[in-house]
Image 1 (cartoon, rainbow, N blue to C red):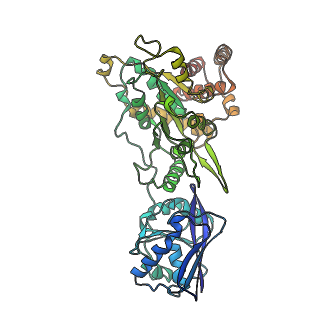
Image 2 (image 1 turned 90 degrees about the vertical axis):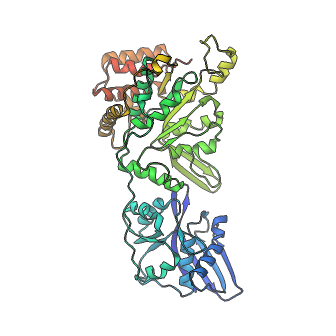
Image 3 (image 1 turned 90 degrees about the horizontal axis):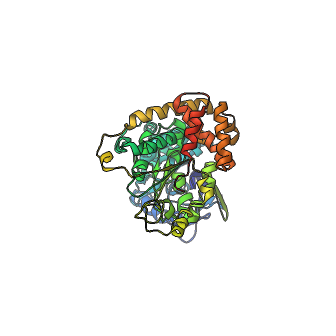
Length: 501
């Protein structure tokens, strides 16, 4: 006898529909799974067998073939266990659906005792089921609130496989779970910007505020202990809250990567990979392709500490994602486009010893220092909006009065982002301006003259010219003015000075 069930498999962060076809017929007892399954899917045979037996169902001692269609799509993960079990119960006559025309998707991993475990990517699966016209989706109870975010279909949570027959005929109708709370008002808990103290940190504090207000990339260069890592860890405390659509994007990525339960939901991601990371780990890759740190930092911050210690090929792989906001990964038989609209925040030392050639105690030869800085290519540095030199604060400044708290700075940043959202649309910041949009900014005559002089004197590239315009637009938004004046342009050009050279 033949029976089918609808389920999904994850392809990167996207869910692809899979039709499970189970055929039970006479022959030597065997259970095979076909249709390009990976090891986890092939092992479903033993999980399904043990789960059904331990829940009191009869496991057919016949030849069982489970086909996962389309056969050309690679299937990965244990999320198809429950759908295979449902199709097997239907094919063996132990379960029937009361409403034959109802389209119900099924997803879940089975334990050997028949309990249903949570799976990754349930949000993307529920959204794909809704787009595909499904009426309902059966999900593990732990994934119920996550699946309810899809909104357009009935969500049926299930805790054990022995509940399936009662759900199928309508005898058991679990209550619809409440959607997971995502976009909550952020609160400053933990590191606060007030920890940046003293006169020498004012320039760094201002750079952080401008970067946060326009979602600009930032590079801090200075000796060890000057406050670079401390400043980066305080940046999330001044970022504005996520819009509903942004929060859903972040949740979808976290769910697909099995990280939705990590940290506080509703906040912007903050990723800080080690400098030994590979290009595939940074932007995504592998076989099959999987998201990297750049995608996990989508709508948040990607912090690269000790930038010049990262592999050159890993850093160069970031050039296209910084510009486009997405990364394309092609492998044999598969292609994925992963979102990665992040704020790049980096920290570097001026030379291998960290003190800088201007320091009398620096022991680095000029050639060694030059080679060290050359690990950051000019092409990548040109894509970074804010480049700031960080100085070591004095002992008196470290022990002095704290700086302005994050709450006050975040209010100004949120107001600036609101102006950008009204002008550009919800969720867009000045860092995402196209060259045409940046050049449409209103400039005073003095600001135009100042930019033209800097373009000629500093020999700026066309990209640097446009990024200076974006920075000036953000400074103007913080000041609450519509037209970019000389003061706003001067601040923007100062923030792009490559003092570390």
